[in-house]
Length: 263
Image (cartoon, rainbow, N blue to C red; front, side, top):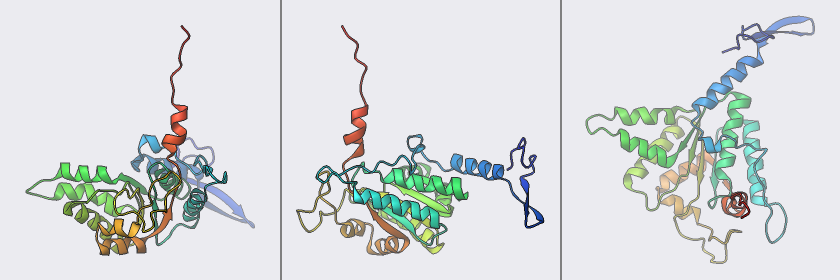
């Protein structure tokens, strides 16, 4: 919807453009700005992550080498290239320990898609989605469940945050499989973040993240959701591995403090 008081288009949504002596009209920027604002409002991005952008993503230095963390550097590059080259026929699967910035980058992606390209995007925390489905359950009719799931199935770009569970129940597996398979069949783009805190450690006990955590074996972790679903995720998403210290513990804690008065 164009802005009523726009000085360029006078509220019509179209502005004149002359090129090589030919005069025509094109969509006014005010209409795109209005559209992107509506998309952001409808995206369900939590307030805590509204600020997340590529510009304020912190690529920390490795404690041992002093060099910029290459995992975070590459992850940011992949995320930016994804936005630049969208539309795409694949999504992104951000994996790594807690606090490395997976959600930050994923939100930055959908924020840029909405603002720069007016692409409808939807954010859903996987745990919140499961809870909403459970709360809406009606033993007589499944219409409430479908009402919750339909926007998730239909979103042009879906960000499914915190895909993690310890020994997921059959119901959780079935629900995730239904969402992923539906989007797979419709060729919808899906972004996923997961800490993968479950599953077995990698074969070598010497393989650890910079924070000292054992690196999980993604194959075994995803297998908990079924071999078919794991295969679909690999086909639907490019894996973006992120390893670093926990930002919340290493950086944010330093900025949290009290103003202590003098006695």
